[in-house]
View 1 (cartoon, rainbow, N blue to C red):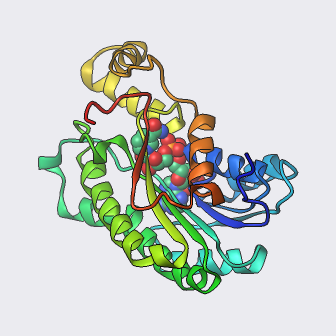
View 2 (cartoon, helix red, strand yellow):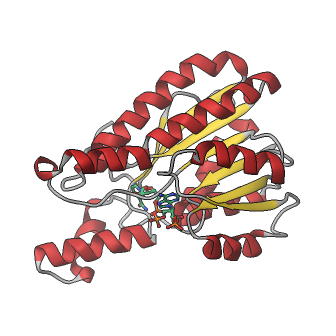
Length: 262
Ligand SMILES: NC(=O)c1ccc[n+]([C@@H]2O[C@H](COP(=O)([O-])OP(=O)(O)OC[C@H]3O[C@@H](n4cnc5c(N)ncnc54)[C@H](OP(=O)(O)O)[C@@H]3O)[C@@H](O)[C@H]2O)c1
């Protein structure tokens, strides 16, 4: 199946490792031009070198801290300068720290909102006019299984990502008639640095080994294993492709069956 991504220009946030890197790799392999964004210039340059030549498109990168004012405008300008107008926006970034929600202070809520939600809303608003003019666009936001089945001890993630889902669904309705789809993709447990770090913290908290935490996690996943970043990246590439033109306003699960509800 040709996904129709050749010569489309994609911005992928959080692309220096993990899920973002896997999405960028899948898009690059399909011939899209890809702008990789994250904070570490060095890590981005390494990923850019790996992805260069994977497909027929060009690879650019832009070091940016999403929590800084002006970051969204800087991303749009970097895409325009290096690759052209943005056809595809993949919103992604770092996850918040774990901890009991009742003990989370207002300053932490604000800080995480400014990093995990506000810049995505702003960047979405910046790219929509161009997508509307060209009559084609894709906005896909990485959230979490926690937006459907809240994850204990990850209250910041559950709450703030649910606001992102509300934004995504509202925007989807506003732009569906312009050839633009807006969706969320919800990972369950995909094996990345972030998952390993959360497992390490859970092991410390529970006084058990990391291997035991992983075993307990796998027992909750009907597939019996953590997901691979590449299988997540491939699903994301389909969702932003020409082929997925009638999927909008959805939250698509990539969780090996982890979420218990229908
Ligand atoms: N993996 C899973 O199974 C899973 C499950 C549920 C939810 N999620 C969520 O999905 C997202 C991606 O997951 P992941 O496992 O790939 O996480 P990860 O390994 O921690 O990668 C996060 C990416 O975001 C970038 N980033 C972090 N903070 C940033 C900032 N302030 N500005 C710009 N870029 C920033 C990081 O690069 P730099 O550090 O260089 O900036 C990195 O490229 C996370 O929000 C995670 O919480 C993941």
